[in-house]
Image (cartoon, rainbow, N blue to C red; front, side, top):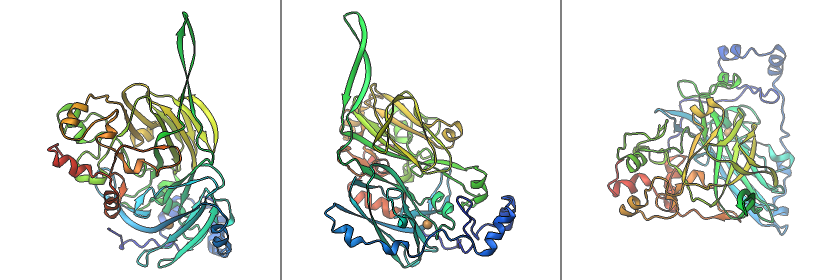
Length: 462
Ligand SMILES: [Cu+2]
C-alpha cells in the first residue's frame, strides 16, 4: 500500500463550534480568505472549545452488552492515510477506513450489539476517531485514537435504517478534512421483522375500463449501496479547506469515485465493436489498466425487486433521481416516506432506502439531479435485462448468460452491500472500488472477478 509521508497533516490548532473547524495546516492566506471572525480568533487563542469528554467512552461496558443475550457483531476498522487515484490521472491525499473509500459497510439486524474497534497503525501520521450514527450514547464521539493505539466501544443498534459513520477527526479537529478525504461509510440496520413487501400501483384495462392493478414484490431484493460525497482538492491533491468553506467542490463522487459506474472500453467493444467509441458522455475510467478503478455498470433483471441504500455523506444536497424510472418506494428509518415519486431529496448525513422494479430492458442513469453534480461525477448507470442483446456474445466468450449481465460480468463489489435478511444474492461480483491494491487482492481472494484479467484471457480488448 502506498502511504504518504511527505505531507504532515498536523492538527494542533483548535476546534471552533460546529462545522467551522480550523486546523494548523491552513496557511495564513487561507485563514484570511475565510475572513475569520475576531471572536473565533479569540476562541482559537484560548485553546479552543473541547466538545468531547475524554472519559466518555471509557464508561462503555462491553462485557455487559456482549452477555446480554443479543447477537453480537464485531466491526473492526483501521484508520490510515494513503494515496488514491482521481479522475483524469494523478492521485490525492486520501484518509481511509480499512484501505477503501467508502469504508466497509456494517450490516446488522435491529437489536444487535455492535462492538466497534478502531485501530491506528504505528506509522500513521495522525490520530483518528469514529462516530457511528447508528448508536445513541454519549460515547458515540469517542476521543482521538493515537497512532499505535486501538479503542473499542459497544452499542445496541436499536433503530433500523441506513446510518452514516465517519471519522470524528482528532477530538473533532480537522473532522471536515478527514471525512471529506474519505473517512466515511454506512451501517445498514435491517428491521427486526424484515423488510416490507413492495406494492407498485399499475393500471390495466378490464371490461373496457381502466382500473388499478396492484403488483406485489418482495420483500427479498437485489441490493446496492450508493454513497454521495464531494472532494475539495488543491492542484497538488491536498485537502482544500477554503474551497470547502466556499462550497466549491472539485469533484462529486459516488462511492468515492467520479463516474465509477458508467461504461468502459470493453462495453464499447461489446456494444459498438470499437473499444474507443464511447457510448456514454463521460467515461474517464475506460482502460483495463485501471484495474479495480476501471468503471463498471450495475446490472439488474427486469421485473426484479431492487433495493438501493443511499447515503449523502457530503456537504451538498442530493436530489436522487433515476432517469427513466420512478422510485416505487422511499423508506427512511423503518417508515415509508413516499411511493411512486420522481426524485427524493437528501440533505447532508441523510439517507434513504429506495425500492423499485425496472419494468423494461434499458439503461437508466441514477443521478444527483443537480446539474453541477451530474457533470462532475454523479451519474451511475443501471442496465436492466439483455438490453444490448449481448447474451449470445457473452455466451460465445465463455462467460455464460442469464436474465441480466450480472450473471456473466457480475456487479461491482463496492456497490453491493453485505448480505442481509432479505437480500437476493448477486450471481457474480467483480472487483471494483476506490480500494488500495491490498483490498483489491482481498476481494479477489474472496471470489470477486478481476475483470481486467478475465477479459484479456478471453481475447476481449483492454
Ligand atoms: Cu481521521
